[in-house]
Structures are given as structure tokens and as C-alpha cells.
Length: 202
Ligand SMILES: Cc1cn([C@H]2C[C@H](O)[C@@H](COP(=O)(O)OP(=O)(O)OP(=O)(O)O)O2)c(=O)[nH]c1=O
Image (cartoon, rainbow, N blue to C red; front, side, top):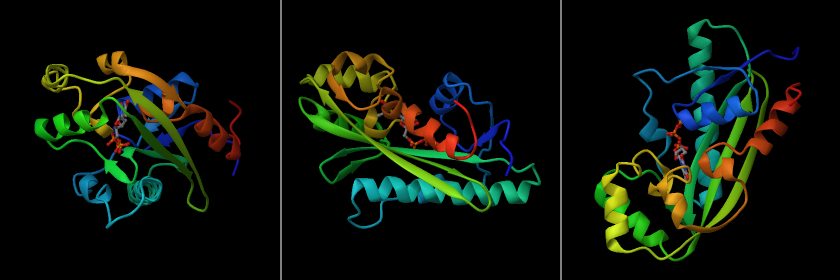
């Protein structure tokens, strides 16, 4: 396949679009149709480990996006997908369903270290390349009031682990080891390496 001029980004996350733009990759959004159930794709199966989970969900997002592209009649180009999850040991913290769950997640992150795992996949009709990046993040202890105020801001909703490093919660992060862009949802070094495998020069 000749080097593509652009790719499809199969993601509803505005952060992923912003991060892809940051490394100069022109992209077009390939968004799910009303018939696609994102919650079902992101459901945890049994006792699966966080790394297994995040990579499986990323592959499922890519498979769904491939079907979408095939059905659309749009021109072929590589598709990029990602999934981010937060983990404490084997415990997976996805996106909070409501304010109570957001509060619980933040209370369990306070004063300790957790992992943020982001899997990225790039695929064409015949080929798939995938990468996993794991960062460690340490939060300072938090008061009930700090957590309640942050939950009331609405920021936790739609974010794995109920926080965003690109928000006011950054003030609680004493240390990170890994990739800032990976924690935001798209590890840019790994993404660039995957795209290079498809002929991109970044
Ligand atoms: C930990 C953390 C997560 N997040 C976000 C990144 C992801 O958007 C979200 C995790 O949800 P994902 O399911 O990975 O992504 P999404 O549902 O937002 O988008 P799509 O599946 O369409 O690609 O959490 C941050 O923005 N900042 C952070 O610091």
C-alpha cells in the first residue's frame, strides 16, 4: 500500500484528535453509528487483567471501525483506535457512571500510585499493528471536600479513573513515570512508531 496522506481516527475523544494533530497527522473522524454500542465493547469480561482488557477493547474498536468503513463506501486509509484504562493492581477503573462512582474512584486513587494503560491500534483491511503503553501516576492524599468539588465540576465524566491529567486534577499529581500523552489517551511516541510501520515519516 502506498504511503497514505491521512488516516481515519475512530474515536469520539477530542483529546485524541488534538494529540494526533500535535504530531502533524492529518486525520478524518470515523465515528460510530447509532447502532454501535460503545458500552458493550468496553464491558470487562470476568477477571481479565487490565493489560488484557485494554488491548482486547482496542481490537474490538478497530474491528467495529473496519466494518463501519467497509459499509460506508468511503476511501480506504489506515484506521487508528485507542483505549485508556486506569488500574490499581488488577482492579480496572473505567469511566464513572455517575457522581457517586466518580467520588469512590478518586477516593481510591488518593494518596497512592496507580497505572494508566493505553492501547493503540492501527489497521488497514489486511494488517493490524498494536502497541500498549503503561504509565504510573502518584496522587497526593485528597480531602473529601477536594474530591466533592472536583466531582461537582463535571470533569470526571467520560474519563477513565474519573480524572484528567489535563485538568485541575494535575495539581494532585506528585509524580508520573511514563507518557503524559499516553495518560491523556494517546501515547504519541508509540503512535508515531505504529504509523511509521505504515509508511509515515513523523
Ligand atoms: C486518565 C485520563 C483519561 N482521559 C480520558 C481519555 C479517554 O478519552 C477516556 C477513556 O475512555 P476511552 O474509552 O479510552 O475513550 P473514549 O470513550 O473517550 O473515546 P473513544 O472510545 O471513542 O476513542 O479518558 C483523559 O482525558 N485524561 C486522563 O488523565
